[in-house]
Length: 113
Image (cartoon, rainbow, N blue to C red; front, side):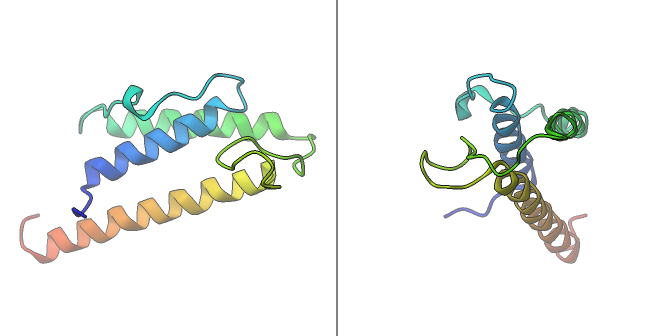
């Protein structure tokens, strides 16, 4: 398996976060092929936009029952809840950011940065 790049990890965050935002908004989730990397110049703005959309989803959840079954990213009948999805987003984001940080450290240690 090839080592992921920072760009690939950024795209990966954009893919799963964007699709996760689609579900509570009632939009059909987009296929991976529909999610394109905006390039180095647009990456920060793209990810900040996803963060803002996710924050709006969280605001909309205020006062709702978070213990209902969630449709994504879990298979139907799994028993995972909306609260599980919120926790999953946090864990996935932490994992991907840690991977980006590790790649940056490796690059700096190699003298290429």
